[in-house]
Image (cartoon, rainbow, N blue to C red; front, side, top):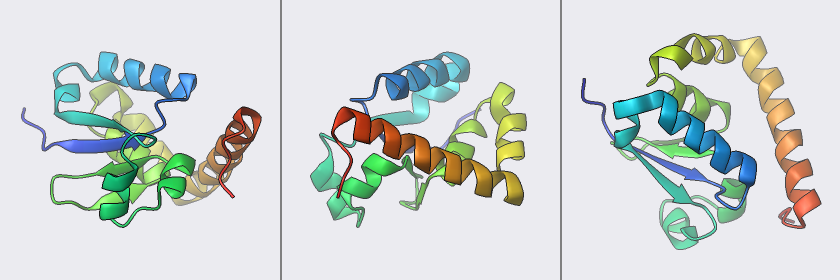
Length: 123
């Protein structure tokens, strides 16, 4: 089944983010071929051209669909996970309103801590 392309803006400097990408590609199989992974640290002008602050992209995963719509945070993870059969139940679960709110809060804290530890936390 052909999937419309997605462009994922992620922090390729982060070892955990690179591991997550590799795991996603492994689990996605052929569906992963329609995902273009872009490092936020090297595509800053592209992000600006799309109206995304590169610092915001460093703090949260951003995904652009084939129509140019961009989602970020937990919604970006849901969009990616919905493409992979084994991850669809997880996508459904994390998209639930209460779960999404808690995960968004935890994710934000985790990212800010990681970036602070690395000396890369934006002002």
